[in-house]
Amino acid sequence: MEPKMSAAEVEDYLGEVFPQMQDRFVVEELSSMRARVRLRISDADLRPGGTVSGPAMFTLADCAFYVAVLGMIGKQALTVTTNCSIDFMRKPAPGDLIGEVVLHKLGRVLAVGDVLVYSEGMEAPVARASLTYSIPPVR
Image 1: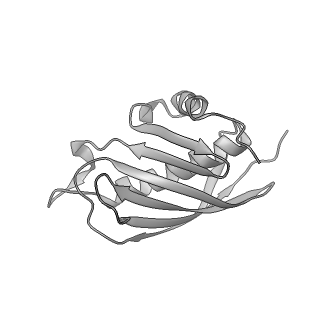
Image 2: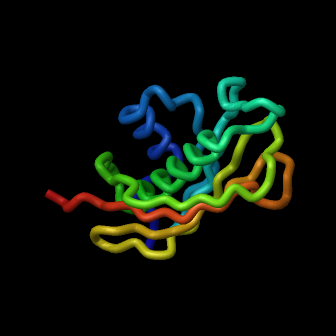
């Protein structure tokens, strides 16, 4: 199954439906059932101790998964998170985060997969998230 949208098309669409996040995310790769998304980290994402906050890591995991699903199904803005479980495994460095998504199942109504979150320059992931998304019926 090939994606219905390119990385550039998904980025443009995110700018339409989430203009407040437009300059924060870069869709670096988008392929069949996979995506790689970068979250540009700002001072607002840092917590005491000079590390990236948990909410920023969650935001990347959720948005990267959204990118992967939209890439596969096309422009369906009301595709939404129904479940997310995240494990924070290591302290990230104060720099950009990269989310690597694998969709394990893409059905008519649900998408299930995982996101590994990496801190730029670190080899081991800093977090792992498992997500389920609800896909709206085609009208």
